[in-house]
View (cartoon, helix red, strand yellow):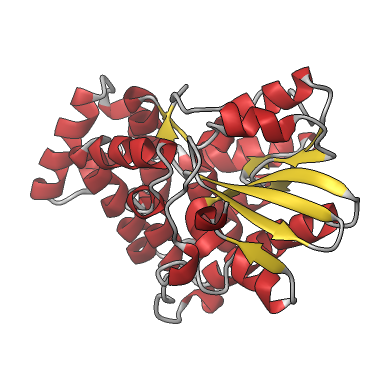
Length: 323
């Protein structure tokens, strides 16, 4: 719902997708890791913006223009960016569609969610399960984040990785909710309808428990490496994004995407998200005038991504260089 504060899970939206994927039966989790579906980009769509601020793409038909703003999957909280083009396009917009990255546990599933979380929190500190070298790295990171060993009380490597990712993001002031949160506020101030989509992941929390340890460990190691490296790459990519430097913005770290790619079912989840985003743009084209849609940058520009799908449907897609 517009205006609703994001849940804790929303801060972990890309990684939270794991909860859906891990609901698969254990016997379905034996295939090798799939390729990253967003690794290959449609190069002719990767174009630097000519207007002030972030880059925009346009999808058009005879009487409607949908302005598509590719947004970072991870960025500094309250990052500054030139809003002049956005505010101009907000005037008279039919609708603003925010990125489909929200996740939540429905109220009806809260007891089951609590039970599963309690099971995940069983056992001693996770660092006691690590080899000496990795334990030393992990202890150094959690100490820098100001967390004690009890914070990561679990036997499950994926659960430990999720908690570490939340703590690292919070300490580094990183979020996947900006600039969408600001866009929501500005749209509501102008009385423009806001569309959001949430994916219910509460029932799938128990799937973490069934995750093969080797897959969960891959995710944990990815998060640990990111936390060690710090937010430098993300900060640089965010600056590039704000200047319309699409290629620079695409250099953002991809820990969670790589993590998802290790899990059977990752392609299905990715397909669902992209199909929903593409459908939202196509739906916005049904009303004459103009609309604004925000889509995470790499899924927007990947082969088989949102814009690639719309072009395959025969829709006209203009790049930031064609403004």
